[in-house]
Amino acid sequence: MSLRPKSYRQLVRPLLQNPALCSANHLKRRHYSKSHYDEQLVYKYASQKINPVSIGQLLKYRRLPLSQENILDSVAYSQAELPVRLAKRVISFHNLPFIVGTNPHIARVYNQYYEAFDRLHAFAPISDLHSEWEFTQALERQTQVLADVIPSLAQGILECKQYMTREGRTAFINDLIRSRIGLRVIGEQHVALSYQFRNENHTQEADDSWVGAIHTKLLPARMMEQCAHLVQNMCEMHYGTAPSYFLDGDIEETISYIPSHFEYIACELLKNAFRATVDFTAKIDRSAHPPIQITITKGDGYVGVRIRDQGGGISKGNMRNVFEYSWSSMQSSEDSTGSSAMAGMSMQTNLALQQGVGGPIAGLGFGLPMARLYAGYFGGSLDVVSMEGFGCDVFLKLRSIEGSHTHPMARAIKGVFIECEPDIREVLLMLDAKEKFIIEDLDSRHLFINAAHLSYIQSQLDKELESTVYEVEAMQQPKPV
Ligand SMILES: Nc1ncnc2c1ncn2[C@@H]1O[C@H](COP(=O)(O)OP(=O)(O)O)[C@@H](O)[C@H]1O
Ligand SMILES: [Mg+2]
Image 1 (tube, rainbow, N blue to C red):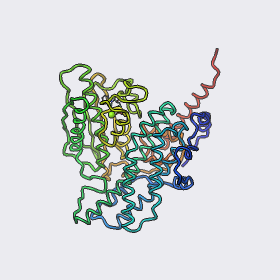
Image 2: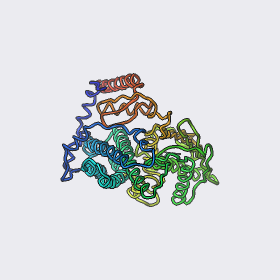
Image 3: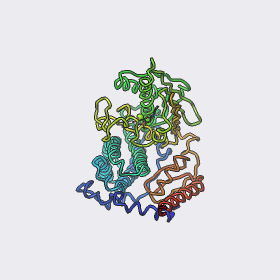
Image 4: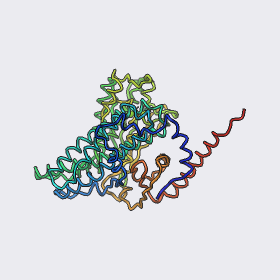
């Protein structure tokens, strides 16, 4: 299926002709170039289709012990998927506005993606364990490099904020982070399976709680407890004081999930709650910090986590911004370069520390939007409810990757591939934030969506385009004097 309303392209053309917004395509030679850059090769890979990360694929090798065939099959999947996904990312940088592409931080991230592509595509089809191990080691290094791109990306986007529209910025980062999650899920899953296979062979023991990087008996209460303990220590180091916390609800509940994803989301949400509590205590001069309550609830195929703090909540005005990338109430008290006063460290140092879990208490403005992307990746959700002047309730819902009948990707959903212009895709991503219908965001021109939502999408898209037409037409009317 193809969505290409003609009128929309006509409308955006004047924007694309704006020199400040023109494509950074030609930059690849000047700023990004590697002497070995092979443009045709990247385009060849990028034009291939990718397959959505499926629960079936992730849990394919549940039956232990793992066999040599399992590992070779798994590596074949990584070899087929990863270079194509990386090439598509490389191309997405070419479409950035010229000036954004010249930013050294953005250029660094670009080079890291290119390098990962270059390393991984170079392997010939693997048919023996020796080559598989070589590929796995390269893959492990590259997935680690990609795991660390967020600080550079955040710094680059912060420096280029004025050269991109809010929508363009959000779409680019969402795209990059979503695809980074996919890349890492595929890469880390294979690396974990490969280690598991070698370990099993070595120790003759099989731990059936793990399927690659997925823990099938993860205790959300224990994960929350560990993260709260870590964040409490961070808070103590940063502010010299920290609130206490307690857990209640279905604390025995287990879930099948990727622990590093859960840990990332939990730490970001807890850092926000701890920071808000300490700040608000100072603001209203109360004698002690009220504790943070972490409640676990059991649902059908999912686990709910509510983090309740008494940190004063979020004002109505700020509520609009909290899910925006690079927006932080911490930054409003800083200078325009974004240098942070946090613990006397530079913005760069703070950003460098914000790798996975840990890092600065706040200031990057990536915590909430990224946590929401992570939660949504496997069909979960993240919502913030604020009681201004009192505190926040943050609701996290994580769907078990167990392949449970309630998982949206495991249910018999009819999906449809959509090919559309990048501008239309941006509109669809915005609509998806209101009503979820995207099963997987494949690349800048392809989405895999729930077929049941097609007529809704079409009508919303028509509405959206009509309102844009109206705005542009209205803008072109001569102003009465
Ligand atoms: N529990 C909370 N209580 C009060 N404010 C919050 C809470 N969670 C998030 N916020 C607000 O949302 C903003 C964005 O959060 P986030 O994306 O995690 O970025 P950062 O923590 O780096 O500022 C924070 O700066 C803060 O103003
Ligand atoms: Mg935060």
